[in-house]
Length: 193
Image (cartoon, rainbow, N blue to C red):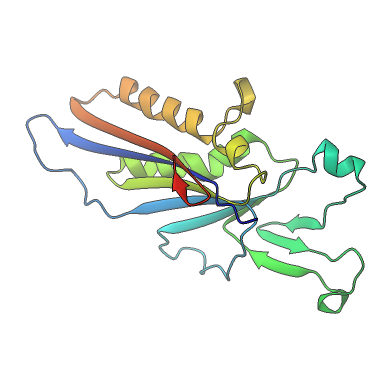
């Protein structure tokens, strides 16, 4: 069964000084992606300009998976994700490694993901850039949890980013006109909802 389920929030914040018609900065894209279960590539050297950042978050095993005796084959070391064949038959018994900008395991918190992925997107939006957070992965991989979460400390990226955007607008001491546009959509079985 092939299923594509993705959620996206796009926040465009264009800062204008009072009476001005042009954005203060060019609208070059700045994108962060939160992915579940996709392979990574070698990361650029520290300090290189990067418009796309990729983070991997592996959810904990579900109660059903645990009751069926499943066990995780995922470990992390910094920003490297490792997959280890439990029987040691693949890859000569060595783990397969993938590099990402950020890697989160089952013990990661919603706040940690927001600080690493969401806050830089908000910072870029307030610097005059269009920004996007995009979650990708198979059904049940944890995209909705990472993006929306629940309440309190378990809020996901969408409510945290929205709260930060409007808190910054409210706290702004300069006379500016802000245009905030957000879009949220889901693609499931190649149908956009």
